[in-house]
Length: 392
Image (cartoon, rainbow, N blue to C red; front, side, top):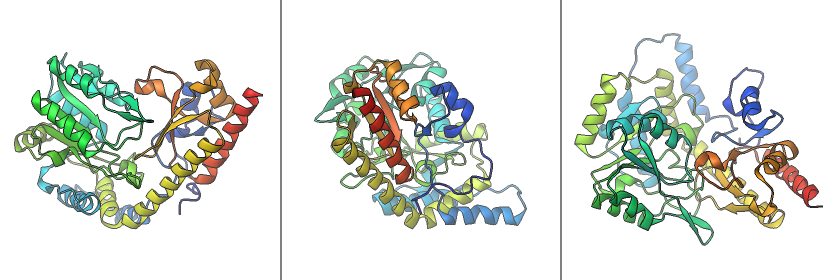
């Protein structure tokens, strides 16, 4: 099912990850294998395709809204996978995850207010904050024992100053792959509660959790000033270009305020294809997703073993969740231009530059491994060859 990429390449597309103009703009060449977008290279679950095909075969696209069934499906899925109880009545549907974040920033802060992010972090966070006229306040993650952790002293100091109105949390964390533990989140929530700071938690990667780790939603702490963005089938089912975003809060006042704004802008209508696809994913997609998770965990394990044995010069941070791995090439002792040339011209890799995520050190890159293993293996062999040529 996952051993090869999508086989209907005769059908045209304009996927960003492989767009020639985009690749040339970012990497200076389109002769690269794209690992730079948090996407997947596999055919989606057949029940989703069947649901959308049924809609096409109906040949009628009258007004049709069924958010209730979507919310029920998301709630049932999270109860089964995470033992997380979500009230279907407490969801608000919006066009996408980024739309949700942008709307919430504007709704719960004023121009000039601070919104805290934990860098290195998904680069769109900063764009959404600054484009809204807010200030991105950085709580830089620190490393301990080979993994990233929250700098809680700095976190509290930033909230204590009074300028931060929102904490924008990424859980699981993109790009460093941390799945925040319950104790870590408890400490974070306790500090936010102390200063009455709103937490918005982007939980779009919530299902991509590898063995030995457990996802904990911000909703589980009963903090009244918290909002989750959970349930989008973008990352777990590969529906990035057709998925909605789903905002959730158990605080009736927050939920009502969000719902009123969304409704006033007619952002909650949805799209029939998205509705049918989402319901099919969460009601019938479990076997496919379990296989997908097993496959990408095996990819992760192959990469980390290969780097450990064959390329110890390349440091990595073990992903606990997400299909991204955070790589550090600093031991190669190349300047940024030389490193980019090595990766793109010699190894033919299109990786996401770490600087996009707010990382100061230009030696960091992110790689998406939701791709066929044989493709990944070929790419790492080429990288190995390029580094060996460099050092010989």
